[in-house]
Length: 482
Image (cartoon, one colour):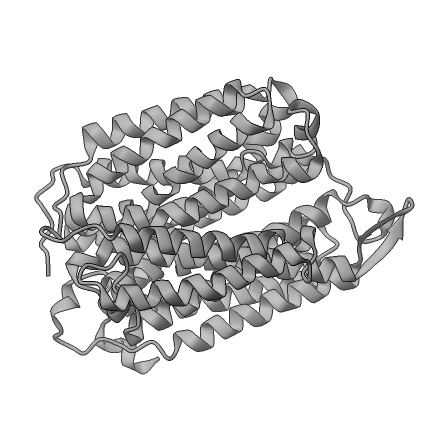
């Protein structure tokens, strides 16, 4: 077990890294209020403008496992500083963009900064004393949800009352501040995989496979699920990803150690991660639509973009408030119990949504309940991963866990799109999602959260007196009772 390096300012370390996580995840919802205006602003079609969101997701998915492995080879702090470069450049490129191409370049660069979040989580094991590690992991993990929740209302207000370019100038300045905070307040982190080589072929292979897979999932609804281009990308993923896995098992220094990734605790934790990512993203897609759908439909609330964002913002605050509770629960009962509790709270939120869908206050309770559950679950997931992998694989393993969460989000978006597209009603001459469609997809969210809880029960507990017993990722003897 690697011992934390001495630090007299763990609060500043955790605060700086959590701030980096919040700002980085702001990028994911930054352009949502602009989607309707982008075709006019960039002189392009609505279909082309949708790539402004897609390209960021793709870049983030491709770069995350790469930066994770580099974190093991070079040290997490050094790679986090490198990640701030595309964040800053991408934000400023978007701020001056006048057409689609530079906007896509800037958004792809912003997506390349997403690898900073799992790096920050993995760095905590070396930078924070063991007694503060659970709360540090919980706060850093919560930052991923906080940024997304707070980014939407902030972006909506700025987009409505100021020049849209101010959004990108603002996040560019915040990205510069991230670099300053990491440089000043985050100590050096050791490289745990020294002497090993970076797997360039594995990086290219995984990147290509992910691009094929995520494009098929994210654009299949637009292109048609049986169209030639969708099937071609799906076939590319089916061919490339198994070939990549075969290479990883045979090479001496793989990008992702599949022997570690296929261990029972890591494999089951990643499976739960995918299901939670799927479940969580459903409410992120459905609740804003319900709030903005005209009240005349009979199941919409008729809110503006700004009002919708304001009603959704408290979820981010709840997720932040859940972090200390998650830390305390992990300390007393272990991360597996914490993850199980989080899944049940998410399920309870979805259960409530089935009877409170048509109420603003009811939906507020729903989103806050789900946010509380996600705060518990997100805190436990990296702790379970770090408690099951060697020090030389921590950054890589946490990055892969983050990637799997993103894949769960993408699958969720595809399934939600299919369900809502097939269950519609006519309104003002246009098809809109029906109440039945919303109820159906919310019920899927409930079932998926319960499935995640069931899988959590199969994650093995740590034996008493194991070497990991001092880590946040280790489970207490009480875990065997679950």
